[in-house]
Image: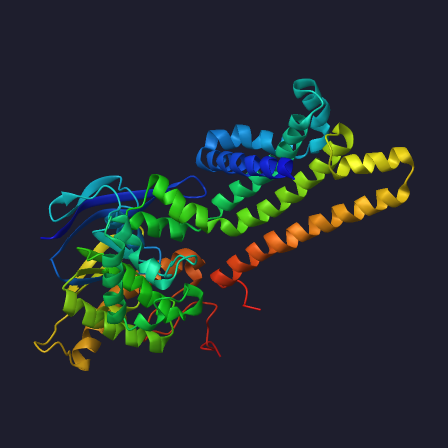
Length: 280
Length: 195
């Protein structure tokens, strides 16, 4: 196994000084070159797990290893694509992409050539000398992906990278991300709350339970040899994940809104306040 | 002119360094940060009597109050600039392996440039005032001295013209140097549209 996550525990102290357990005994193995998604209700700790893998945060116990090596701090071999692009507004697109390379002490010319190659891959070579504010949201996210890819990372960590984009842009970027993944064979660890996105993109979907965050089920997504999955298969997998998640979503809503809330598909709400006139 | 440039430069450097420490270490923020706020509320001319005792009635005293007039505002602005650097930029930089001096130079400093520029602007206004006050009381030539001369000769026309000149120089520097600097940064960052 390439990325191994072993017995991770993590808790935070909240505003009321209570200890809240966010992750409880996470065990996960990811093969090299695979595309794994994590879905779960909001607040289930999936982003926290990604930060732990990135080395931006420390776990209370348990360990994360990449290729046998213990993760202790952030490093260019595990880059993160954040929800917002996070490009530096004072640098041009090209300078943003070469930022990590120059940090790695690569000669300027070489870094530039490499960055231009990657920018071509995300179809942005025309905008190499623009500043980030001149780009649209989708373009910014492409630059951010290019900035990550240019490092030739072992693992690409993506934290809901497309959730701030509109539907059309997202569809285009899904396709491009898959192309890039097939071309570069990079391992992708993808966080999302969008079940369809997870099923469309990845080979394996990890469903998270919430409070505390645990792995509820790991569902492989069947793919055909030619890489095209029939809609029916996608839909079936989606339904399956949704039904697993339903219970978790309900739990979150109950916690937030109290017992008033009842969310069940194909059921009528039979509370006293919801009397539909049966006593007449 | 030499006095204000030197004093201003020292103030900026000291302000940035102090700002860095206040931002970086909680203990310093709790102690020194409080002192800086207190010191900031002292008008720089109030330091003049002390300066005269320490350094005598000379150029050095004027340099001292010019510097001290600008340092504290610069410190306050630098601190808030550093504090307001978005977490996202810091995370991005760390992911790519930036740390230490490199992290400061390539992320913290550029990200707080807008705030630092407005700090420079206020610091400039403060040191310009301090310079005039210093010259008026301390002598050593300059516009303030001219103003004092006008008063003792009873020449109000001289006094008024010097006042106008002071206002003009202050405005020109603000407009030509700082506004332009600010505008350039804003256009580059996309906060403001190119005019």
